[in-house]
Structure formats: structure tokens, C-alpha cells
Length: 482
Image (cartoon, one colour):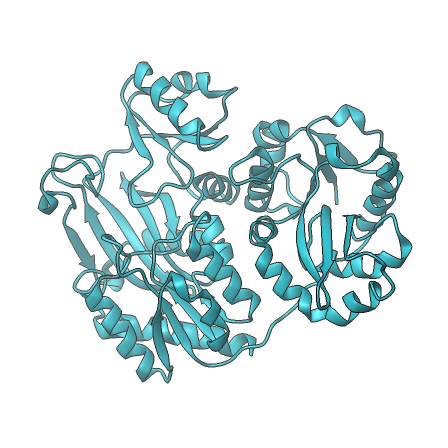
């Protein structure tokens, strides 16, 4: 399998490894040669994995392109929430205590390069930490009060690495390229927590729908409780977590999903679906790599954004990668507006998306759970607006367009086939696929990991059966990993 090492300064590397190329993150992101080729192994050694940095996007786009990448996006998110990793390190607490049994100081700090350290006595523990974290270069700090604990673990950039460690890194890198990765599984139980936000003015499920979820969960045999963002410490009491809040990576919903998954709970929305679906850059790459029809789109960086007027006609759409509920999406009508909006968006993300504008009277939404179609709806555009929601509307009643629910067996076959193919690339969770129909062709706009399920709207055809199907999927998810 061809291998790429992604670093900011490739010229500093002089590796003597077969089938290995060292390139910059910008080249990996933008070069068409890496967008279509399959079976690549990517070692992401960028200086930062911060959310929406180039290093973050290298891992995100690698997964969208079907490349094997280290670290994965889920690992990058784990490193943002070290409390989860500290909890997981308790699984090898005995090894931690043995390793530092004769340590004279109450604090130890060391770097780990693909599971190897500069000190041989630490290598067994270092390998355990590498299997836990699955990141190429990290710094671990252990401290002692009553006993030794992992107090911190974070990524280390090449700039932070001492020069004397270069031979260790190269040796560890060679060994890693020849080894297989390890995975761990948790335990499962049988109670359900539904995460909600009572103060959210625009939740993905209204109060009536939540009551129907609760009723369906009881009929499915769950002992169910509603929880809020203050209840993360209670997750250990449950077998499954069902998130009915608007999700995002930089949000407590993602922390809940990660914590629940680390405890062995079945989770909808699972953290992988959240990280994939809430980023439009990832979806763009994923859908295009798998030849699913989408509006013509261009991933923009600060360096290539001037090409857009040559590639797309006005008006076109400019999107923030993690926008939701029609927010972070702007229709661009002229060059002056484009320059203003892109400047604002680049303050939040190194990448943004420009997309051709496809005007239609309504958007299709296909709801899918565990690879099965739940509902099909037409979301009509808000009054005198180009989106289904007009957040600038003065009257709340004119903010949303009308919704028409369509029986699944009467929906266009091409619509359903495309929606199922798109969600099949994400996982087996609960998704809503937004699509536009133009001249009989179906274009995927985005895949939502947290689709609206409101009483009297999405459930208009199936009624209570819709809630039963979702609960059955959660139950099957528990049993499949029990």
C-alpha cells in the first residue's frame, strides 16, 4: 500500500523507505492526484490537529477518500477530551503502578513515537498508550498523589521533538509501517438515556415527539430517562444513549457521544457520524469519491479562493463547513459580497465550500435508520426566500416553508437509492439526506446525523410506527455488540 507522510516541511525528511512520499498538507488537500487514488496509508504529522486546521482536514479528507490515516478524526477528538482517555487508562492501571513503582519523583513526562519512547523501561506502557490513543506523536504526563495516574496526554509536533529523538522516531516509524493496529471492545447493558435540551428554541424533536419516543422506548422494553448536558457523569448507568439535541463536534453532544461510546453504550448519534455529517468538506469529498451526484462544488483555501468566479456562475452558495439548520450558508450574488463573506468564514475555518446554486421549489429529505428508509418529506422554500428556513423573517410564522410527507412506496426510486447509498458511506445510525431534484436527477446536498423528527410532520405517514422503528434499531444496536 503506497504511503504518504504529511508534514509542513517535507525537505527536512530524508527517509530511505520504499513506497513512501513526504508532502505538505496543502498538497494533499488540493492536489487532484490524491483525491481519486485509493489504497493510500496516510501518516498525518502536521503541527496542529486543532478543529478545522489543515492537520484536522488532512485526517478528515483522508477518511472521506477511503485512505487509511493515522490519527483518525475520532482520535483527534479523543485528544480534545483527555478525561475520557484518563478513564480508559484505568484498564491498565496495574501496569502504570508497576512501571513507576521505583520512581523517586512524583511527576514523569515523556514523548511516545508510534508506541516507543527514549527509555526502554517505559516502552511497555508506551505501547499500551499508543494502542489507546492511536496518534503518532504524543506527550504523556503521569503524576502521583495516592497513586500514579495519567494526568495529561496531548499531541506533540515535530518542532517540539528534541533532535536526539529523531533516530527513535525514524525507527518507530519503520516498525509501525509493518504492523497491524489493535482495537478494543466494551461491555453493553440495557437502559436508555435520551439527551435533550429543554431550553433549545429549535430542537430536532418537539415535546410531542419526545413523548412518543418515550412511549415507544417503554414498549420496546427500555427503562428510559431524559437527561441534559449536566448529566454526563450518569452515562455509566445506561446501555444506550439517544441524542435528541442539535449536534456538533465543538459541543457537549459530541462529548456525550464519545463518553458513551468509551463506556460501551450503543449511541445514536454516534461520534463518528457526528464528526462526518457535521462537516460539509468531508461530505463533499466522500460523496464525490464515491460518484454520488452533488452540485458542482469547490473546496476553498485562502490561496485558491480567487478561482471561484471562473468556475461558478453568480449566484452561487458559500458554506461554512459546520453550519446547521440553514445557518452558515450564504447566497453570493457578486464579487464584492464574495470577498466579504469569505473573509468572515476564513476566520473560523481554514477551508470553506463554494457550491453552484440549484434553485428548486422544495428540498427532498429522506430519513433513514440502520439502512432502512423511515420517511420521505418535501420541505418547501420559506416565503420569498431561497432556503427552507428564513432566519431573517420578521414573523415567526413565515420563517419556515411548508412540509409535505410522502409515502415511501410513492417516492421516486432514484431518490431512495441515492439516499441509501449516501448514508451507507457514513454508518448505521439515524440520518436525514437533503436532496434536490433537477430534471429528474437527484443531487445530494448534505447528510444530517441529527434529522428533525417532529410530531405531525416526519411521522405523518407512519405515526407511532416511526418511533417504534427507531427504538428497535437502538435495541438491535445493543444486541449486536453484546
